[in-house]
Image (cartoon, rainbow, N blue to C red; front, side, top):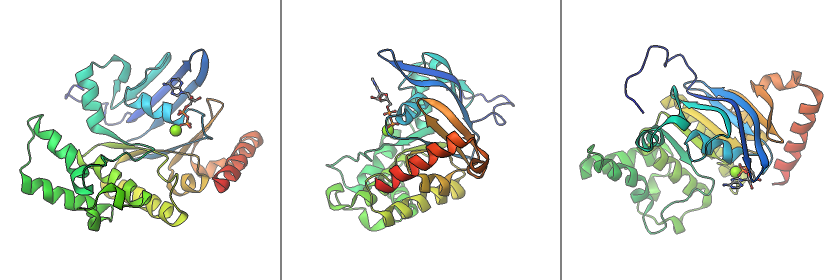
Length: 263
Ligand SMILES: Nc1ncnc2c1ncn2[C@@H]1O[C@H](COP(=O)(O)OP(=O)(O)O)[C@@H](O)[C@H]1O
Ligand SMILES: [Mg+2]
């Protein structure tokens, strides 16, 4: 991404989808999807399984390209960026994957250190003491300091997810994307992770996108909600405005609530 920033860039949304269409094998997944995420804002993308939430996140990082429409990140149209510029986008915007995928052969601490060591290859080397200090700080921030020398197989799903969040923060991103952060964790840990995501947004002013089918989490976290139904944006606005939404949208929400109580 070019380093020059024109004066408009600060005022523009950090992430912007305009009229994005995406199909796979003639099966439409995203249909005229438009929404934006302002700098420092937390937007929750809500919808049932298979609706296109992960596909939406992959467009932000340029892993997928829209068939039509535009995705802008930090003022730049993602589909127009060269590979080297995409690498820079993926440094500024990091993703906590649905699986939480840690390197199983590395300790929690070494997982978090990984992006810091990678920086050395880009000429931004930290010495070993600085790396260890930063790892301690990040594990402290996500409240799993004790896990530093443990292997992922020794950690619960919730703890692994906290470590994955610490690793996503290591490169000092401007924005963070969470794909189903509370799926497969027990209700208490889900609450802890929700609290953690809120704390990171408040303390670090991180622009955040959270993808979930969990209504309770969405209500807790969202500045604004994007609700996807059949690939379309059925609602985009503050959670509090949902009460005034069309009846058909509210019905869809209630259905989703029942699904998330089951799952
Ligand atoms: N790379 C791909 N190739 C073909 N189909 C895909 C691809 N990625 C996602 N899909 C399809 O797009 C739809 C939405 O997927 P996804 O965004 O993963 O749903 P979710 O909302 O559960 O995250 C699904 O039907 C999925 O099978
Ligand atoms: Mg998904």
